[in-house]
Length: 543
Image (cartoon, rainbow, N blue to C red; front, side, top):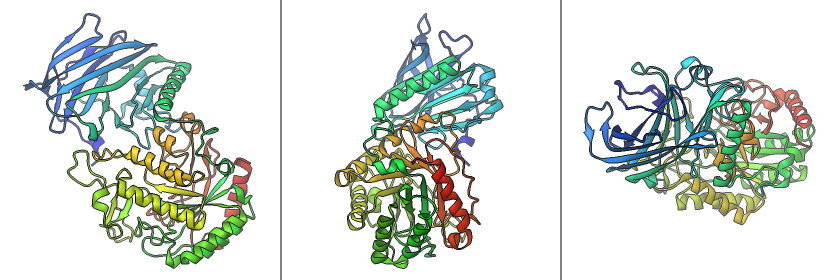
């Protein structure tokens, strides 16, 4: 059962307060530690309704008052947007703070909520359906969201200078007179304290299309300054050749079970075929499973013996250079087999209280319908693992002259109390670029601050590419199709664990580079379709 399915089975009986300048809209506040959740009690509101001081808490439900700290809230008007400043104190370290809003315009809530990266023509929570968005993640690329239509709506956002978890949860519990929009902010687990200042939370009511766009642009300007985001056209970590890439060709290597889709010699033949139908300098060849058994060999990265070993890989890289194709081997940004990496316990991702190992997933690689037991996920912020990744990638660049490196799963964010994962990504990239300034670095998934670190990403698996406000991505970075996109024909996902999926139709989306995957039977059986895809990409991509 997912977290969105869990809830209180009683009325928390929070005191609500009127939002100044917004008739009918009310707000409440809850504060959480690792041991319990609390509402406010003994709250004193200023005459103008803009300042509140509460010198006591009560357990949720208001049955038991607790002398455990205090809360100060100030609501200001910033250019027509209402802005909450929340300072909380508690005798225990604060885990999260929740702002609750009710009485928001009913018609706009019925129309649903959308983030900049929500699919065009789609919305969350239409007609009162319960939903949850979590930043950073596939559904919420930056902590800004709107409700209603483009012509009539509202916006809600957080101006956070750091990458910290924000959760938007909207529901209509039986005890409430109407829908409640909950905005939850989580401090970094590594910086939990008994005093906490929540970053500004902003609500803008009565927006039309122009006002919503202006509010989003002001939010993005803040994020640009806080995270160092630079425009795609001028960012220095994009080699010139990347700007001409029109097609990514995924050359599947060796599956976790040891099944070989393509040897290095077969990969070279595939590149020769592709080069007949699109200018090869416009092709980026992506190599998952090049290191041998996919994920099983992680994080040891040398050319797989069953694919042709070092000599075979060197021959592939020579062929690519002769053609003008660029090569991008795949690495696990988190993934590791504990058998392959004895130091895993130092680097493994930990939960926010540092009491247990945090697992991202446990794929059933061999189809016995049981997840494998030795796969863990490591934190690139841990110095030894980061140094291992840097040296592994650097050795491939040094020995074989590859042009790019792809880092799997780094789009997933974790609140590890020992090492900041975003800081780990930044250090990883900085150390690689110190050695190899022209190396392109790509990543699985994207969100605002991650786009500042990696200029290219794979779009999240299963997430629509037709974004409501594409500039949240295209102003800064580019994406391509996910590894799990099926190959032409039966739709093999190659080394990925999804089995067979139909390949999506080729549709041009701004900022998205099309992809075609090549598995074991693709070129013998679907050569004409691959050729057609190459020609389509050549016609639609950058010159």
